Image (cartoon, rainbow, N blue to C red):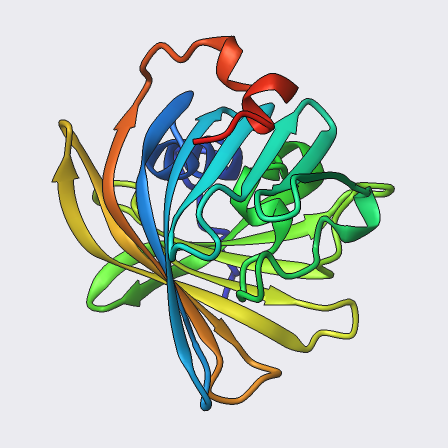
Length: 238
């Protein structure tokens, strides 16, 4: 019988994931994005301005369309709040709703405010090397840690070896069924950083249902005032 050799990688899965996540998050970030929600019946678009400080703080402000302009989502530590401009109503989003759809999209509240910490919430393991769009990628398996506040039974994450740019993420439930998958593309240089500017979340359960985020502009690792992440800012009119 021939001996079986285990492939040895020069980096850990944690190091690879950290570099990949930094490409799309940074320590801090501020920018404008467009979200396009597409179904078999309609397509709607939202323009947003957003600020993030790691996984701890976030503020997302809807700029258009006019009927939704001024709606906001605020994250401070473990607490998340939503503000509806038309009714001037502020609501606290409980942990049970973190994985609910954000504004009818295929992204969750957790996705938009960068609440999850992959290295903290999952066990990470490099499975193999595969090509995505002809680019060699690490395929990393993420298995939730006991009592981690996550819903996914397993996640597979493909990261390009040449530049650590994310290529594909697949999300599975506890029974092993794929629920959704995200494809990254539109790689561009933005303020000195090479990053994917188009993120498409595809819904496996809902036919012809997907949500695309297009990054119009994004700056990373910049100074952001803590005043932005406050109840006063949340309820302040635009």
